[in-house]
Image (cartoon, rainbow, N blue to C red; front, side):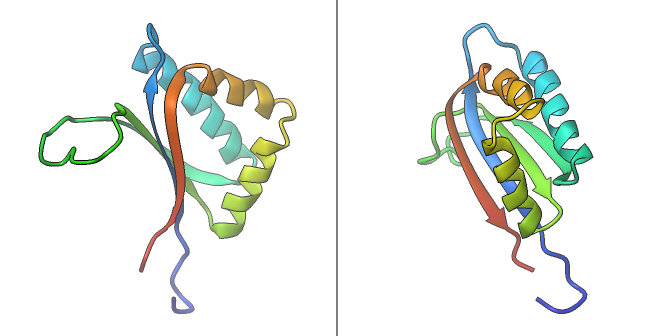
Length: 115
């Protein structure tokens, strides 16, 4: 990475919604969760993805229908965000519970963009 390049780190989560939970209800709590992380200075953006099923692209991918992405300012922010969530203190505790109670079968991974 050169002096002028920026680090890009994203956490991706893939999961299913619990029975009876609409995507719009999840989006509402996910946006609130991410907005709080944004206000704390950890993330600069986030995305919510709904799976578009395709037999060719779906080979060996977990059977999940929703994916999220949180884009961190840098690696330090990704680690600090993890620590903040793991500390399990209010208001993050309630925000995290609101998101987690809507999902099942979750997978999470942190990626660094290759420039």
